[in-house]
Length: 315
Image 1 (cartoon, rainbow, N blue to C red):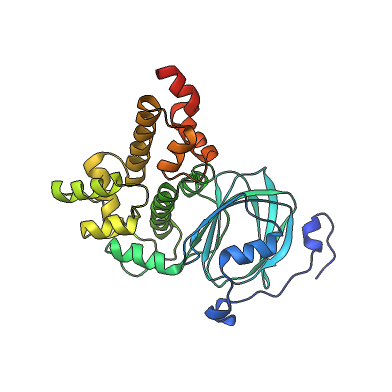
Image 2 (cartoon, rainbow, N blue to C red):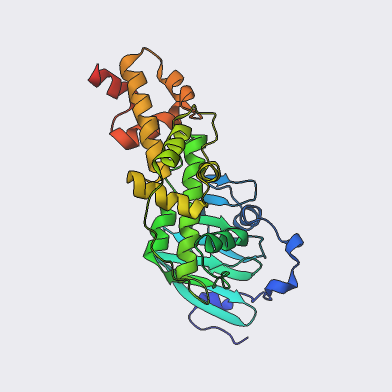
């Protein structure tokens, strides 16, 4: 390799690239495990399903290392200061500029060396390929084509969706799981439409749920905090796929299942704070929050007041 003159990144050694088929699927690390290894830190927040699919928010130091093949697609939205970077796969070198509004996609099984000279703030989605296939099937489209590798690729829609996860996880198991499932399916739809070698065209869906099916869904959402209000359970009750249930529920109510449940839990909290002498801790526990702090933060995001201040004001 020739001696560099101005760009210090050129002085860094090139690691051999790894093609997808070089590493058997069974030997690939889960995305959260590989990211913890290569970033040498713990995420600020992480929420994972049993499959390893999930969302993580990282703030890490400059990176000069190889990200090894993973068992999930990794989609990232950058939220830090503007900076130049490089991504190297074998003899291929891609230079780009990280700035808000760009996304990074690492397809499952791929490997690259990353040279990022400044600290990074990023939200990541870990997406099994099976989820892409399921969303494509549920939407009635053909099997998804290969997900494209993207480096600092402008996509403000995907970036905004993914960054919305950074401050929304509420410490409430039901709300957080429903949020994660809805966001994962929405992002999978976006990836199929904009980031594959053969983009998928989704047809608009019209028509809501029948009154009987809608009532059954609302009864499940209104049930106690230990009930299964996952997207899988709601869709199964309705006899629909997750993709079609979310669209039909919003057509019927004007709200996504998550927004409906969040509004319902807020109304429950307000009723308990106004009409009973239950402590804020008791209200938080009753509504399924992991802590009083998590409940107070979620309540203030919705109302602008802490639970204590709101109770004092309305009584």
